[in-house]
Amino acid sequence: MPAINAWLIDATARLKGAGIQSARLDAELILSHTIKRPRTYLHAHGDELLDPRHREIADARIDMRLDFTPIAYIIGHKEFYGRPFKVTTATLIPRPESETMIEMLNASLGSNASLLPNTKRLVDVGTGTGCLGITAKLEHPELDITLIDISQHALNVAEKNAKALGATVTLHHGDLLRGYALPIDIILANLPYVDREWDVSPETRSEPDVALYASNHGLASIFVLISQADQLLTANGILYLEADPRQHHDIISYAKQYRLQHLQTNGFIVSFCKQ
Image (cartoon, one colour):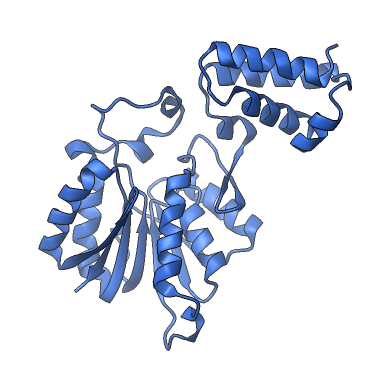
Protein backbone atom coordinates (compact mmCIF):
# COMPACT_ATOMS: atom_id res chain seq x y z
CA MET A 1 0.00 0.00 0.00
CA PRO A 2 1.32 3.47 -0.85
CA ALA A 3 1.94 6.15 1.72
CA ILE A 4 -0.16 9.31 1.72
CA ASN A 5 2.47 11.40 -0.02
CA ALA A 6 3.14 8.79 -2.70
CA TRP A 7 -0.58 8.54 -3.46
CA LEU A 8 -0.85 12.33 -3.68
CA ILE A 9 2.09 12.53 -6.10
CA ASP A 10 0.58 9.88 -8.36
CA ALA A 11 -2.94 11.32 -8.22
CA THR A 12 -1.66 14.82 -8.92
CA ALA A 13 0.27 13.61 -11.95
CA ARG A 14 -2.80 11.85 -13.34
CA LEU A 15 -4.96 14.95 -12.91
CA LYS A 16 -2.34 17.21 -14.43
CA GLY A 17 -2.11 14.86 -17.39
CA ALA A 18 -5.82 15.39 -17.98
CA GLY A 19 -5.33 19.15 -18.02
CA ILE A 20 -6.85 19.86 -14.60
CA GLN A 21 -5.19 23.03 -13.33
CA SER A 22 -5.99 22.50 -9.64
CA ALA A 23 -4.54 18.97 -9.66
CA ARG A 24 -2.66 18.98 -6.34
CA LEU A 25 -5.45 20.77 -4.48
CA ASP A 26 -8.08 18.40 -5.89
CA ALA A 27 -6.01 15.35 -4.94
CA GLU A 28 -5.64 16.65 -1.40
CA LEU A 29 -9.34 17.47 -1.09
CA ILE A 30 -10.33 14.03 -2.32
CA LEU A 31 -7.95 12.18 0.01
CA SER A 32 -8.72 14.30 3.07
CA HIS A 33 -12.44 13.79 2.46
CA THR A 34 -11.92 10.05 2.03
CA ILE A 35 -9.91 9.51 5.22
CA LYS A 36 -11.96 12.16 7.09
CA ARG A 37 -8.91 14.19 8.05
CA PRO A 38 -8.05 17.86 7.33
CA ARG A 39 -5.60 18.64 4.56
CA THR A 40 -3.05 19.70 7.18
CA TYR A 41 -3.04 16.09 8.40
CA LEU A 42 -1.88 14.95 4.96
CA HIS A 43 1.03 17.38 5.06
CA ALA A 44 2.12 16.21 8.50
CA HIS A 45 1.67 12.45 7.90
CA GLY A 46 2.99 11.95 4.38
CA ASP A 47 4.74 8.68 5.30
CA GLU A 48 1.62 7.09 6.78
CA LEU A 49 0.35 4.09 4.81
CA LEU A 50 -3.12 4.31 3.35
CA ASP A 51 -5.76 1.83 4.39
CA PRO A 52 -6.58 -0.38 1.36
CA ARG A 53 -10.27 0.53 1.49
CA HIS A 54 -9.48 4.24 1.67
CA ARG A 55 -7.16 3.92 -1.31
CA GLU A 56 -9.86 2.13 -3.33
CA ILE A 57 -12.39 4.86 -2.59
CA ALA A 58 -9.93 7.67 -3.25
CA ASP A 59 -8.87 6.09 -6.56
CA ALA A 60 -12.50 5.86 -7.65
CA ARG A 61 -12.98 9.53 -6.82
CA ILE A 62 -9.89 10.47 -8.81
CA ASP A 63 -11.42 8.59 -11.77
CA MET A 64 -14.54 10.73 -11.38
CA ARG A 65 -12.42 13.88 -11.39
CA LEU A 66 -10.59 12.67 -14.50
CA ASP A 67 -14.03 12.58 -16.15
CA PHE A 68 -14.35 16.26 -15.15
CA THR A 69 -16.89 15.69 -12.41
CA PRO A 70 -16.63 18.87 -10.32
CA ILE A 71 -14.77 18.42 -7.06
CA ALA A 72 -17.78 19.78 -5.13
CA TYR A 73 -19.96 16.90 -6.35
CA ILE A 74 -17.27 14.39 -5.43
CA ILE A 75 -16.83 15.60 -1.85
CA GLY A 76 -20.45 16.75 -1.47
CA HIS A 77 -19.98 20.34 -0.38
CA LYS A 78 -18.73 23.76 -1.44
CA GLU A 79 -17.75 26.77 0.63
CA PHE A 80 -19.71 29.97 0.05
CA TYR A 81 -19.05 33.18 1.95
CA GLY A 82 -16.99 31.22 4.46
CA ARG A 83 -19.64 28.57 5.16
CA PRO A 84 -19.95 24.97 3.91
CA PHE A 85 -22.97 24.20 1.73
CA LYS A 86 -24.08 20.70 0.82
CA VAL A 87 -24.32 20.21 -2.94
CA THR A 88 -25.76 17.44 -5.08
CA THR A 89 -26.22 16.99 -8.82
CA ALA A 90 -29.69 18.51 -8.33
CA THR A 91 -28.10 21.88 -7.58
CA LEU A 92 -25.79 24.32 -9.25
CA ILE A 93 -22.42 24.56 -7.50
CA PRO A 94 -22.05 27.89 -5.65
CA ARG A 95 -19.51 30.13 -7.35
CA PRO A 96 -17.25 32.82 -5.90
CA GLU A 97 -18.67 35.50 -8.22
CA SER A 98 -22.08 35.06 -6.58
CA GLU A 99 -20.61 36.25 -3.27
CA THR A 100 -20.56 39.74 -4.80
CA MET A 101 -24.35 39.76 -4.50
CA ILE A 102 -24.06 39.32 -0.73
CA GLU A 103 -21.49 42.10 -0.55
CA MET A 104 -23.82 44.42 -2.48
CA LEU A 105 -26.72 43.45 -0.22
CA ASN A 106 -24.63 44.14 2.88
CA ALA A 107 -23.70 47.57 1.55
CA SER A 108 -27.34 48.33 0.76
CA LEU A 109 -28.66 47.33 4.17
CA GLY A 110 -25.75 48.77 6.10
CA SER A 111 -24.99 47.97 9.72
CA ASN A 112 -28.27 49.35 11.10
CA ALA A 113 -30.75 47.17 9.24
CA SER A 114 -32.08 45.76 12.52
CA LEU A 115 -33.28 49.27 13.44
CA LEU A 116 -35.52 49.60 10.39
CA PRO A 117 -39.19 50.15 11.32
CA ASN A 118 -40.48 47.14 9.36
CA THR A 119 -39.11 43.65 8.80
CA LYS A 120 -37.97 43.43 5.22
CA ARG A 121 -39.01 40.45 3.12
CA LEU A 122 -36.27 38.95 0.94
CA VAL A 123 -36.91 36.25 -1.65
CA ASP A 124 -34.14 34.12 -3.17
CA VAL A 125 -35.47 32.99 -6.55
CA GLY A 126 -33.90 29.88 -8.06
CA THR A 127 -32.23 29.18 -4.75
CA GLY A 128 -30.51 25.85 -5.55
CA THR A 129 -28.36 25.06 -2.51
CA GLY A 130 -29.86 28.08 -0.76
CA CYS A 131 -26.44 29.72 -0.54
CA LEU A 132 -27.66 33.24 -1.31
CA GLY A 133 -30.79 33.32 0.84
CA ILE A 134 -29.28 31.40 3.74
CA THR A 135 -26.18 33.58 3.76
CA ALA A 136 -28.37 36.68 3.68
CA LYS A 137 -30.29 35.36 6.70
CA LEU A 138 -27.12 34.60 8.64
CA GLU A 139 -25.67 38.01 7.81
CA HIS A 140 -28.95 39.81 8.54
CA PRO A 141 -31.11 37.76 10.95
CA GLU A 142 -33.79 40.48 10.98
CA LEU A 143 -34.78 39.69 7.38
CA ASP A 144 -37.82 37.51 6.58
CA ILE A 145 -36.47 35.17 3.91
CA THR A 146 -38.10 32.76 1.48
CA LEU A 147 -36.21 30.36 -0.78
CA ILE A 148 -37.90 29.46 -4.08
CA ASP A 149 -36.95 26.82 -6.63
CA ILE A 150 -38.70 24.93 -9.40
CA SER A 151 -36.85 21.76 -8.35
CA GLN A 152 -38.12 20.00 -5.24
CA HIS A 153 -34.83 18.10 -5.07
CA ALA A 154 -32.95 21.39 -4.92
CA LEU A 155 -35.30 22.69 -2.24
CA ASN A 156 -34.59 19.57 -0.18
CA VAL A 157 -30.88 20.37 -0.35
CA ALA A 158 -31.52 24.00 0.58
CA GLU A 159 -33.60 22.88 3.55
CA LYS A 160 -30.77 20.67 4.80
CA ASN A 161 -28.31 23.53 4.43
CA ALA A 162 -30.58 25.90 6.32
CA LYS A 163 -30.91 23.46 9.20
CA ALA A 164 -27.19 22.66 9.27
CA LEU A 165 -26.27 26.34 9.37
CA GLY A 166 -29.02 27.39 11.77
CA ALA A 167 -30.90 29.68 9.38
CA THR A 168 -34.66 30.06 9.81
CA VAL A 169 -36.11 30.45 6.34
CA THR A 170 -39.31 29.60 4.48
CA LEU A 171 -39.22 27.28 1.46
CA HIS A 172 -41.54 27.63 -1.53
CA HIS A 173 -41.78 25.26 -4.49
CA GLY A 174 -42.51 27.25 -7.59
CA ASP A 175 -41.50 28.46 -11.04
CA LEU A 176 -39.86 31.83 -10.41
CA LEU A 177 -42.47 34.04 -8.66
CA ARG A 178 -45.56 32.34 -10.11
CA GLY A 179 -47.92 31.58 -7.26
CA TYR A 180 -46.13 33.90 -4.84
CA ALA A 181 -48.34 36.81 -3.82
CA LEU A 182 -46.67 38.66 -0.92
CA PRO A 183 -45.00 42.03 -1.43
CA ILE A 184 -41.21 41.73 -1.63
CA ASP A 185 -38.58 44.26 -0.54
CA ILE A 186 -35.51 42.47 -1.91
CA ILE A 187 -35.09 39.82 -4.61
CA LEU A 188 -31.89 37.81 -5.06
CA ALA A 189 -31.75 35.72 -8.21
CA ASN A 190 -29.08 33.56 -9.78
CA LEU A 191 -31.19 32.14 -12.58
CA PRO A 192 -30.11 30.06 -15.57
CA TYR A 193 -28.47 32.48 -17.98
CA VAL A 194 -26.12 30.41 -20.14
CA ASP A 195 -26.73 30.47 -23.90
CA ARG A 196 -26.38 26.99 -25.38
CA GLU A 197 -24.25 28.49 -28.15
CA TRP A 198 -21.54 29.54 -25.71
CA ASP A 199 -18.39 27.53 -25.09
CA VAL A 200 -18.53 26.22 -21.53
CA SER A 201 -16.29 24.25 -19.21
CA PRO A 202 -16.59 20.44 -19.51
CA GLU A 203 -17.36 20.41 -15.78
CA THR A 204 -20.76 21.98 -16.44
CA ARG A 205 -21.87 18.69 -18.00
CA SER A 206 -22.44 17.41 -14.47
CA GLU A 207 -24.62 20.34 -13.42
CA PRO A 208 -28.40 20.38 -13.98
CA ASP A 209 -29.39 21.90 -17.32
CA VAL A 210 -32.43 23.56 -15.75
CA ALA A 211 -30.12 25.60 -13.51
CA LEU A 212 -27.73 26.60 -16.29
CA TYR A 213 -29.37 27.15 -19.65
CA ALA A 214 -32.12 29.48 -20.82
CA SER A 215 -33.56 30.33 -24.22
CA ASN A 216 -33.48 33.78 -25.82
CA HIS A 217 -29.68 33.90 -25.63
CA GLY A 218 -29.82 32.95 -21.95
CA LEU A 219 -32.21 35.76 -21.01
CA ALA A 220 -35.64 34.09 -20.95
CA SER A 221 -35.90 33.38 -17.22
CA ILE A 222 -34.38 36.73 -16.27
CA PHE A 223 -36.88 38.63 -18.44
CA VAL A 224 -39.81 36.73 -16.92
CA LEU A 225 -38.58 37.53 -13.41
CA ILE A 226 -38.22 41.20 -14.26
CA SER A 227 -41.84 41.34 -15.40
CA GLN A 228 -42.95 39.58 -12.21
CA ALA A 229 -40.85 41.89 -10.04
CA ASP A 230 -42.79 44.84 -11.43
CA GLN A 231 -45.89 43.46 -9.72
CA LEU A 232 -44.41 42.31 -6.40
CA LEU A 233 -41.50 44.60 -5.51
CA THR A 234 -42.38 47.31 -3.00
CA ALA A 235 -41.58 50.95 -3.68
CA ASN A 236 -37.78 51.33 -3.57
CA GLY A 237 -37.47 47.55 -3.49
CA ILE A 238 -34.25 46.12 -4.90
CA LEU A 239 -33.68 43.35 -7.43
CA TYR A 240 -30.26 41.69 -7.65
CA LEU A 241 -29.53 39.54 -10.70
CA GLU A 242 -26.56 37.46 -11.72
CA ALA A 243 -25.81 37.27 -15.44
CA ASP A 244 -22.87 37.25 -17.77
CA PRO A 245 -21.50 40.79 -18.24
CA ARG A 246 -22.14 40.58 -22.00
CA GLN A 247 -25.89 40.31 -21.15
CA HIS A 248 -26.07 43.30 -18.81
CA HIS A 249 -26.85 45.89 -21.48
CA ASP A 250 -29.88 43.95 -22.72
CA ILE A 251 -31.08 43.30 -19.17
CA ILE A 252 -30.80 46.96 -18.19
CA SER A 253 -32.66 48.02 -21.34
CA TYR A 254 -35.42 45.48 -20.75
CA ALA A 255 -35.83 46.44 -17.08
CA LYS A 256 -36.59 50.06 -18.01
CA GLN A 257 -39.95 48.88 -19.35
CA TYR A 258 -40.90 47.73 -15.87
CA ARG A 259 -40.06 50.75 -13.76
CA LEU A 260 -36.77 49.27 -12.61
CA GLN A 261 -33.97 51.79 -12.35
CA HIS A 262 -30.44 50.45 -12.80
CA LEU A 263 -28.49 51.01 -9.59
CA GLN A 264 -25.14 49.28 -9.90
CA THR A 265 -23.18 46.69 -11.84
CA ASN A 266 -20.40 44.77 -10.13
CA GLY A 267 -18.79 41.86 -11.94
CA PHE A 268 -21.54 39.39 -12.78
CA ILE A 269 -24.13 41.14 -10.58
CA VAL A 270 -26.49 43.90 -11.67
CA SER A 271 -28.99 45.60 -9.33
CA PHE A 272 -32.19 47.58 -9.85
CA CYS A 273 -34.48 49.71 -7.72
CA LYS A 274 -38.27 49.80 -8.13
CA GLN A 275 -39.30 53.35 -8.98
